[in-house]
Length: 203
Ligand code: ZN
Image (cartoon, rainbow, N blue to C red):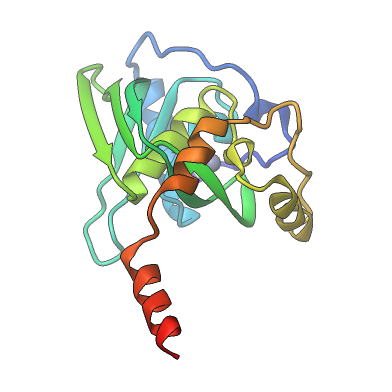
């Protein structure tokens, strides 16, 4: 059990391709235990192997609430087998200390992966939840994709990155995703916003 050093944005290891885990060995079990220790020590909800310098297709998440028991979930060799819909997601990343921004995400995801014993499982997540966001964010890390690559507003995101002394968005990595953006824009506003508008209208 150890807390590992987290690789920070700008380090090429965050962009490297990762390899499938072929042997569910003791070494892999130790790495996963260390990744969980590292994630909890940094109050993260997810951590991917490239973030600790390992080019392997492994990520861990725990989206339990602070008042709930720990619920770590390990994803090895994950594949996204369905993605649909679109939503805004306000996200940060342990490799980007303190920087948060709005990004585009799918609103419905089905992921298939193996657990630490090599057994396959499927997980579905729908709607604007931490789980739906975390699954996509961590999965992306295994393909060298970072959350700022999905930024909805490049200029705004660059300002935020600059504020925290981080490099600007790498323009050749930024994903256009015009269809996702159009779908987010087209969504009816949430109930809270509509209520506030109604109140404002009365004044
Ligand atoms: Zn991240």
